[in-house]
Structure formats: structure tokens, C-alpha cells
Image 1 (tube, rainbow, N blue to C red):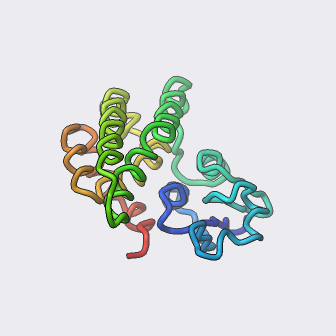
Image 2 (image 1 turned 120 degrees about the vertical axis):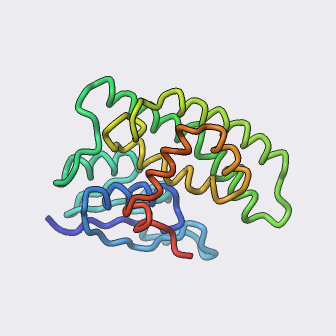
Length: 208
């Protein structure tokens, strides 16, 4: 099989999720830069890979995919390496529930409403940040409740849920408010210490 291709920017949370999965599986890949925020706009050729112009997109031996969760599951199932999905149906459902919860309720609040607003705006919207922190608190509370006993979110097995959560929380804790809020959830903070220490997390870090 040929080397898979990931299209996207290394600053992207969702591109990093795919890169983490590839790294944990031990798969070499090519990252083709696509900056969806470039002044000149999204490259016209890229819409052949993602009709909505979002990142990431993925290609492997002529097989194209978009949507992060679809890519992550394909990588786990199509390549050798440690399995990143539980075999038991209820555990797999819990993994998918956590991923869905993060997408629907955590990503926007943690990344855009708090971290990006604080880091990138000359005059941050404090009301938006406060609202984002409230939503982030609920998401972390829910994640803490859903977490199984053991080192990872599903227990003893590192899964796609861990690799989905890590870049979102990693962006959130770039700011002091994120660090303070995470500290209120000791089990998730301990999990964060473990996942952020993995070689795959360092290898997928955005360029400074």
C-alpha cells in the first residue's frame, strides 16, 4: 500500500487528531498544506478533496475521505498496528458518544470561544469567553463522568476517544482559564498528563 496523504494545516485541531491516529498506528504519511484561512482563499483544487472546503481530507491509494472520524476509523481498520477501537459493543458505543460529545459541545467552546478569543483577538470578547468557559465546564464534567476507571477514557485501552479529546483540550489549556478549569477535574487532568506525554502528541505538535 502507498503512503497515505493528509490534507490540511498543522495548526488545526482536527488535522492533529488524524495525525495522532496515524502516529499511534506507526504509519508514515505525507502532510499536504492547505490553509483554509489564507488571504487568497481556499485553493480551488482542494474542493475535489473536500466539497465543503474544511480540513482535514485524506487519500490512500486513490481512496479519498473527508470528516475526521471517518478518516480515523479507516486508518485504524485498514492498517496494521495497535487497535484503537474497543471490540465490545457498549465500549465502542461509549467511545463514539465521547467523540460526538466533544464535537458537538466542547470543540467550539474550548477552542474558539475561549482559546482563540483570548490568544488571537486584540480586544477579546469577555462575555463570549465566560460563556465558553461555562460550556467547557459542562463538557469536562460530562467527560469526567463518562471516563472509565483506568489510565484512558475507556479504561486500559487507548482509543480514538483519547486521540480526539487530546488536541481539543491541548488547545484549551494554552490559556490560563483553560488550565484553571481543567484543574477542577483531577481525573481528566491526570489523563491529560498521560496523553500529552506520549510521543505521538509531541510528533503532531503544530509548528511554533
